[in-house]
Structures are given as structure tokens and as C-alpha cells.
Length: 264
Image (tube, rainbow, N blue to C red; front, side, top):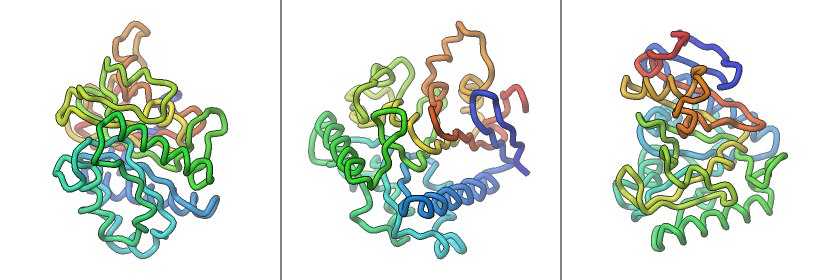
């Protein structure tokens, strides 16, 4: 059984016994938000990330989820993307397509990926323009209290340095406020060229999930969630800055990742 509690500022925390339990709980949650969103406004706008997150979503293509989810109502986006060809092994699009999207019935026109034939700067601008068009036509909801889109669910992994999407500690992209999508040409992790949602977009979502697994994430999880003295440099940790203004924040982790939390 997962150890679950709600922090007064940092959302709901779920610490799972193992990866299988985490995966089942995560997929149950995605299916639940999908159903509620489709019932409420006829579509489910989900934002994916790369890394181990996609493998943890793997049960979506198995019974009963493959049959009970209304895949035709899904619209799929990415919180960040590496500016590489879509056929490249570093591509978040390729990872999701190979392991998830090609195995279920999501309309190709509902999959909103970057233009992989232009520069990082152009790719970011084009991606933002495409999303703005979808907000204008109400395919994607608009936030009630900001200029940003209100995605139904944003799924984020977290690095051992506390980065989320391609927002890294002390990187200028972390403080971009006016753009929905920004770009990097100097990512601390290869490949260097990337596009990423900005914090205002992440924090305008209806639901945000942060997933972390493994002991290497334990310190970053502690710094991202636990109450800390004001002078702590961790207050500029990207994962710490994920704080939906009018939405839900849920942390899914295994026991090793949660081992340094005050409550564990």
C-alpha cells in the first residue's frame, strides 16, 4: 500500500512500495482524469515528458485500460522535447510513439509534436503558435487567471538535480514568464538543443503530476517537498517551483525516491 498524505503547500504525496504499484496507481489516475475531462468538456489534453515516465505508463496499452479509455478524445502534447529528428533515439516523441501512441487509437492529427526540421528557437515559436491556435479554437482550455493554456494533465519526470521538463537549476529558461514555450541551446544534459514549456504554463494546468523513482532522486524530492528555511537555495529548485495556481499537484514516487522526506 502506498503511503499517502497531503502537504499544506506541496500537494498530495504518494510513496509506493515498488515500481509496479506506482505504475498501476499512475495509470489509474491518468484514466480517471481522462474520463473526467472528456465528461466535462469533450476532450482530454495530456502533456507528456520523456524518460522512464513512458515505461511507467505502459499499462495503459493493456486491459482494461486499452478498452475503457476514449483514445479518440485524447490530444497529446510534450512538456519538453529534444530538437532532434523524430526518428532519433533522443526524441521524446519517438519514445512515446514507439511505446504508447502507436499501440492505441489516438488520431494522428491530435498529436501535437514539434517541427524537427528547424532550429530550436523556431521550433519553440512554432510550437507555441500551434498551441495558441488550439486555445483560440477552444480545443485546449484557457486558464481562468492567466494568459496561459489550461491543460487537463501535465506529467513531469524529475531529475536528480531537481529539473522538470527542460527547466534546469539556475538556467535562464527558469525565469521566462511571457512565453509559453522557450528554447535552450545549452542544456546541461545532452542533447543541448531543446524546447520546453515555461513555468507559467506548467502552473496553469488543471492537474500536474511529478514522478520520481530511485534513490538518486531522494535529496531532490526532499528539497522539492519538505518545509525548508527561507534562505535554502533549493527554493530555486525547478521542481520546488511547480505550484499550480488553480489546480492539483500530485507526487508519485517509489520508496527509495521518498526515503529522505520528513514524513517517511
